[in-house]
Image 1 (cartoon, rainbow, N blue to C red):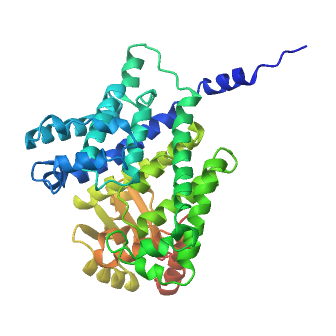
Image 2 (cartoon, rainbow, N blue to C red; image 1 turned 180 degrees about the vertical axis):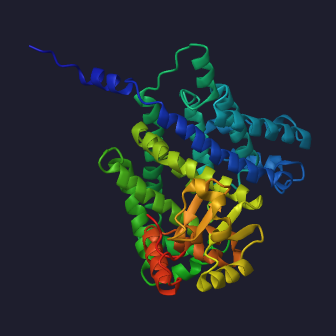
Image 3 (cartoon, helix red, strand yellow; image 1 turned 60 degrees about the horizontal axis):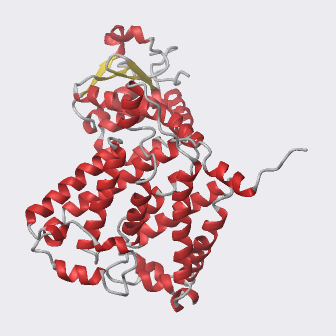
Length: 440
């Protein structure tokens, strides 16, 4: 008879089972980008917030943080700014903070750089506690947890050095991701419980009040607050999401939909309320819920995108070098009139040539001049008909508002049909019109 394992043993095996290192490493990178952006914004406010010229003295900040009503996290009793009140020392702290964020982002000496990021983050938050949001404090917590996790197991300079040295990579365990996931679930649940202790949230009037706050609301938020029923629906939807997320997010079937709703939820917060980095930190914390296979599939999808972006960069360089050449039928009156108008709105770097005189220059590209006009870029790419037209729009600033329209999904099929119809109706009457159908 097969013995069943005790529940405690099964739980330990589940928690310590090897996990894909990619979600944790991607979280380190995304979270590092959020920290870097926040660091840049703090640098722009360095003098009025963190030097002896600050609006708030160090003594007032210390009294505020250590007051009985706010003494929630004992580790906030220490910080670096108290070692010296000088501007030079504050600049040294910021220099260490910026360098450690860069190392954390690149995964170089990941554990030590995470420690420095944590120490500097806590010190900066303690020095100026009046400007922080919930996102800043969540950043503290996530940085604290990362001190104990192998965040540099992949996509890092540390991993690259270990691979070159023939050393084994650290193993990511299931609990490593689970502690980050549980932290975010606790944030949502505690936020729900806190809101349910206030009358405004229980009565559905909280969002209307927030949208009318002069310093926190966006310029258009008071208009949203005046729409009948919208603030109430938004208030109850917020409570419903914050209550269901901590419980339903553990279902792999429901998780993608819940994360999608969460993205829309935080996008709505960012669009209506000035909440600092709150929404960005929260969305970064969604990464540990993503599977490694999902992240790899996104990477495969981005592969062609990177190639396409590289092609766009090369085409732009060819334009600046004057290597965009349009070949058209000089015997077609309609074509000549179109070229005359296009020349007036296009940059002078674009050249216009009659294919009957210069077509031999690009015969290696096998153009079908009997069917379409062509845009030849750098002597390597030949774009016919509608594709030539929409690419040329990049060289016509007055027509840039048309760009989103001609790059919509399905626009090529519609554009080819319109090009064919125009060329048949207005093209030359010869048996081989130069601007007829777009070759497929």
